[in-house]
Image (cartoon, rainbow, N blue to C red; front, side, top):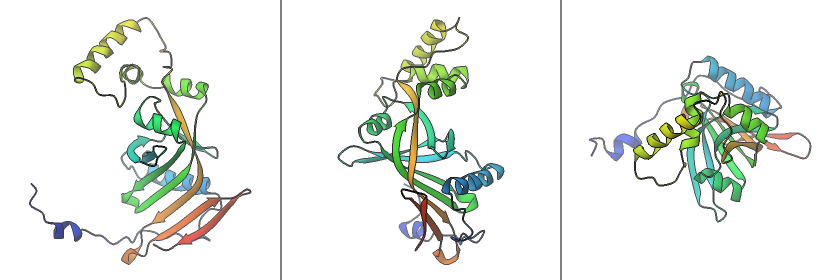
Length: 218
């Protein structure tokens, strides 16, 4: 066991002093505001600024979460790719609601997104899949994601088999079990760390026309 105590963990804290965020300073469009913050994260040389926690749930409400990578975003939503037969894929197909969380600690910022989920078009999935490195494409074909396997050798043998199968193919086909999901945001919250834990929280909620913008208590 580690030598630190529960008191040591409870004492971990830092004061956030870099920036502030107000309703008047925030862009009235949450996607434009996200674009601004995401650009700053990209320009700050953060490791994996597109890494986001994806939370899903079964139809009876049992949650699960994992890190995935954002691959594109626009006013239609936030897109990531995965194996449709994975745990998250099955949960999203049976309960098409999700939450995303971006955490950029170096900038003292978080962004929370909640919304409905849909699959992207096969054309979008194919275009992205075939833009990936060849090794990643073979890896997607080889992995029965989220299923129990006997050992790593199962994956390595499958990779070798597929490398032989596709050795004469300049472009690999898109697996039927693999593709993208788009999270269409209904709620977007921007969190900016502030001193004394009095953080700035600006929440956008989708209405029939436009967005309602509100400040939340930290």
